Amino acid sequence: MAETKDVDLMVREVEAADMEALADLMAQLGYETRASELQMRRETISANKHYATFVAVSKGKVCGMIGTFMCYTYEHNSPSARILALIVSEDVRGRGAGRALVAAAEKDLAQKNIRRIAVNTRFERKQAHEFYEKVGYTKNGFRFVKELPMPAD
Ligand SMILES: CC(C)(COP(=O)(O)OP(=O)(O)OC[C@H]1O[C@@H](n2cnc3c(N)ncnc32)[C@H](O)[C@@H]1OP(=O)(O)O)[C@@H](O)C(=O)NCCC(=O)NCCS
Image (cartoon, rainbow, N blue to C red; front, side, top):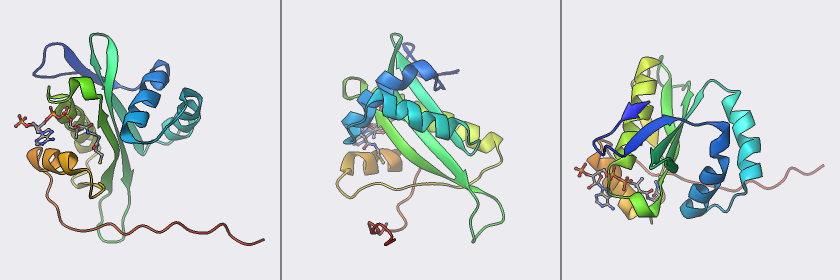
């Protein structure tokens, strides 16, 4: 459990009981999701040791989350990591929860000997770009996306 500069805010590992709150956060991120769907995703994710998920809690209520994934790459000998999801509830933004979540994820990755972390973010998430730069990330590329068709039988 990590403390933050806000005495009323702490970060801990995600728990099974957090799925309703995580579904609300996913909706705020633009992905309408039922708690039952998140429960299913969590079962897959928590069975894979390459994932890590932390939540921010304020006044006993989950108000943010971060999920990371560590992976092996073709370019480096040591594994790298990605931030797969980061969201802080609108009503607590600007209080340090985002920074605290990133710090908790980075500490966890550093303990796993990971020294490189990246995040993809949409062009329109301009606030997130400023946030990432504030917490030490450097813009160094673009992401290209393509939806693949279902394979023919
Ligand atoms: C991006 C986000 C996670 C930031 O969370 P937060 O809890 O509001 O951020 P913090 O309060 O920890 O801010 C940390 C630093 O970033 C800065 N920052 C945060 N939001 C900012 C913004 N919109 N513009 C400029 N700076 C910003 C803060 O000023 C702070 O700097 P300081 O510590 O020097 O004072 C939050 O705004 C969010 O959930 N946005 C919507 C979802 C999203 O875009 N997620 C990223 C998907 S890739």
